[in-house]
Amino acid sequence: MIVTSTPRFANMVREVWKPLTLLFLWDVVVTVTYFYLPFDAPELPVTLFGSVLALFLGFRSNSAYQRWWEGRGLWGLMINASRNLARATRNFMPDPDAADHKRKIVLRQIAYVNALRCQLRRQPPDGEVIRLLPRHEADLALNRANVANGILDGTGRRIDEARRAGWIDTIQQAQMEAVLVDIANAQGGMERLKNTPLPSQYRFLPTFFVHIFCILLPIGLVETLQYATPLGSTIAGLMFMAVLTIGDQLVDPFANTDHDLPLNQMCRTIEIDLLQSIGMEAPEPLRPGPDGVLW
Image (cartoon, rainbow, N blue to C red; front, side, top):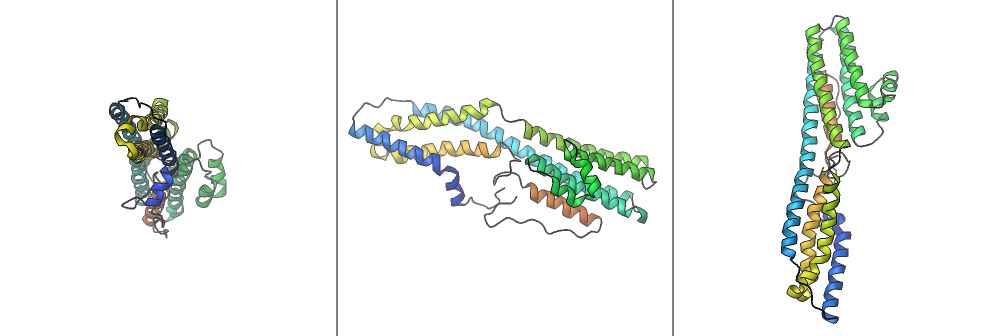
């Protein structure tokens, strides 16, 4: 996610220079043709076309942002639930004999959020799971189709082992299981966003209509703008292409690009909070890179 107050000019140019160059060349072709091969340019209702297209793109951008913001809200719930699980583990199991068991539950939750991050970004989770879990437990989770869910199931078994060992009672077990339910529900919402794209009408039609509009725009403006047609038409087309691009960037909040949610940073936040809650040494928070992007 870009966290600088204003986008860098180089980033903006990298996003739009190709379609913008093609649009400018087309505008020049239309203008030169109009003056050197005189023809009567049709009076196209570009204002009407542009108004309808702007409404269509507005609906699409709002839908894309809603998906992005829902993803952020679900990760906020995941952060809170992880803290609640660590706090319950610490407070419900003060027995010194349960110290190792308590540490395992906390490390499992850290491994879980990192495995979930990798799944949402379509990355292999092996390294993140092996880093935090014993090899035999990591292999057990990695053999599951849903690695993160496998880790969460194992956490539930560790909580049940604590009850059978007498470190927690059934009421405390039920409270901790309720936190696991919240975690599972948040994961389900994230997977729904990841696996359910926008309807094809929202993905194909806006792109098609913007391209058609940009082709017709200089034809409808050339008699009015004359030699300024390439400049005016390109600027107007840039506005529509920018709105189209914004929707494309926000529609998948877990796609691992500059514009998506900083899952690495949120997982690091969970790791720091959980390790500190049980008195273990924690890593440093992640900072934005020199390009102003927080991953």
